[in-house]
Length: 147
Image 1 (cartoon, rainbow, N blue to C red):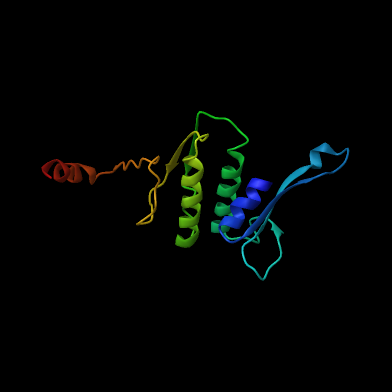
Image 2 (image 1 turned 45 degrees about the vertical axis):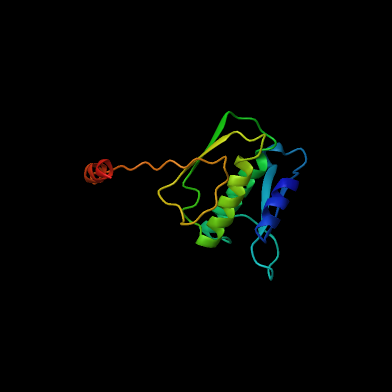
């Protein structure tokens, strides 16, 4: 919860992770993610009806980043998490993600995406690989070799 709060605060929003205790009814226990994206609103449980797809993507990514310090894995893969985000949030999440992936304790992280914004800031620990695919690649490969 502390990591999640810190990550949300870093993008100018608020978020908390809470455990809903249902007593002896263990099947009803829930891990709830509460978020607030606008200063004039209250915190609400993250769901498909209140928040936009981009806001849910931001929340999911910040939750995953928050868990990195608590879990161990040889590498992490994130697939197209930025697709529903507006450019402002995409930049904020990319900055948080590269910061988390560049820490000394971090494992290798792969972001798979068909698009990235222009002029994103990378740390020296980041490597970008562009893979081109599709029927047009034959002509592009010929031009690349001629350069």
